[in-house]
Length: 206
Image 1 (cartoon, rainbow, N blue to C red):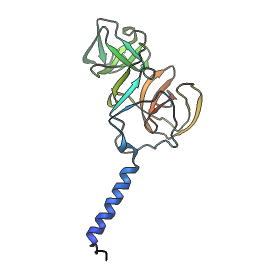
Image 2 (cartoon, rainbow, N blue to C red; image 1 turned 90 degrees about the vertical axis):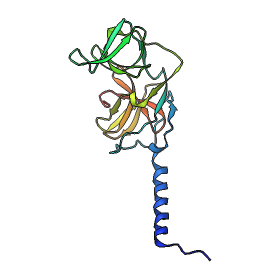
Image 3 (cartoon, rainbow, N blue to C red; image 1 turned 180 degrees about the horizontal axis):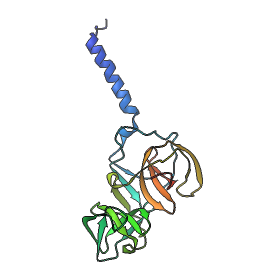
Image 4 (cartoon, rainbow, N blue to C red; image 1 turned 120 degrees about the vertical axis):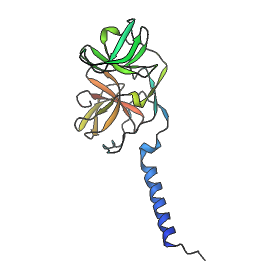
């Protein structure tokens, strides 16, 4: 004969079951601390909509240098600025000759960079940088140090990473992504749903 369950105990069981279902259906809760980003495009069945909750990404991304532009400082001493121009304040950071940096947004002659050793970020003049350095090694980059870009409008057109052929997508306005690199008029974004990458037009994601 089954034992009777009191009302408080029954309520606790119901609530526990509900909490388990919620946790298992939230993909943001299942991120490992470190993931290797695929150098390919795999579209998700559906792009997650914007959320009022804090953004969540894997703690560290292992990024191939085919996905991110890396260069070196070519001057004895280069100071980082808060923004793209001499009118912006200087950080208390100096990059030395030979320092490897990842390249992000570019505005005119100014380039946003990430120091791969210290994780310092800021803007430098493009003349202080060498041509991109191509290596086969994977770069571990903390997601907190990567730029976050947002869909400026509903996006219905994107581009495959390898072929750069146009793709039909349905990305809602306001959706956030991590930006990996900027080339020509496009930005390469990281797709959390499929752990892959996708080109967007720079005007669509800023």
